[in-house]
Image (cartoon, rainbow over all chains, first blue to last red; front, side, top):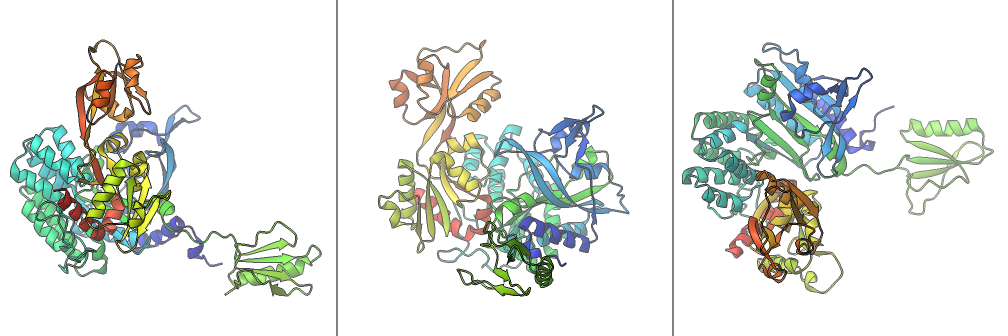
Length: 417
Length: 206
């Protein structure tokens, strides 16, 4: 029997299609257990988004945890070397507290990890995989790209307390222009540095490398480049080339210039590629220097209110876990967000119902049902007089005494096509 | 079409007037009605009237693309949204207030009555002060007068309610006013519609 993809739930469809994509690029499925020793996480708790871990005592008295993260378990067991990188994908459940519900949730994730030596080729491969992953979830999607090296380079150059920097970063993450201006003033940040920090909020380049000016055209007047407050503001219509020119202008030290080169090299790869219309440069992606050290990306689809994909370069995690000589990059797709937000296939458990009288021949009924199944229908046989459950079916048949099927007229005139 | 979550009540009326003044009218909304959703196809807006404390929830979960909410609520609930503009309406402050003549005993756990337990906890944790948070839903000023708490953490606009209850502001925690927030994903996909609105509102605000 063939798998009818359109009948699956959206997250099941996505998981099936994503596996196909990752295998096309030579990624191997990695399957792991649900549990990990709790001690493993106590050593690396700062890499987890929440310090809270669901634990239980195993039969031998050992404290175990239901996995709050997959990447750490993969890094722990990696056999990669510089010359022989590992390309893995996984489809697992993780267990984390939900901020909204204040309870633990099982979160279905599918993701890819590349461990070895990360080059410009690898960056391009992972961004391609991320773009293709989003494309198979929904047609309308955006992949925001940022670079941790650029942000940390900029923050290193700013002369302010750690606390002030944290508040400034929070403003950048939330695109909060008004409070950023107040903070810069309150902390006496140098005007040039202040301008650089404010400019990060304005960078929204996307819609391809070429400056076609049409990608974000406004509803009113269609100029797409309306700014808020400053003269170079919230355009987004400049394309990646325009955004990259601004990134180069803002790069004032070695780490920032290196990051700008890396971003430029990545965007060059996608020059002219149809996928590039969904690429954006956005520095509001949270800076998590404990985890990420290079490229970061986050993916959105139109129907989901939150990101459905997140990832980046995570060498610091490898170094902390004693894999000092390797580099890694990866991302996860949040299937629970996909499931919760995207339209699901019509909720019916069968296409056809065959109504049969109690005295009907079981052999004739079986033959009739099998005939419909062979045509690719999902069929339920139901005795006449049983509780009516025929509303969701596309077609309802009566089983005649000679074993033929007689289509019953439906109130709404629906017929089997 | 942009879905806009407005806080029900006086603040919502003022915010709607601001939106209407820059071209986002929806005449149906001005007619007295018990409806909660008002759309104006021509202007490309759909207004949703929502309890002020719930606006950020609607926006964070994408039921509304943008919304208007007080900074006090954002500080308390910490939703994952973009905060795009300070509308300069409903200006007030989150503050600690105590009965006139009250002297704090630093050797005792401070009893704090508030509608904003998270704000209060963060503020006193920053000062390394142990507190006992008493979560109330209204008439906070009553708590210290009846000995339920030592101080209160609440929004203060003109201070007249405090004065009438023989209380005064001791410390200001954070300024507050109405903020325009956006769902992170909606902002990315509807930026072409939201940015012109943002621009018009910021121009109008001066």
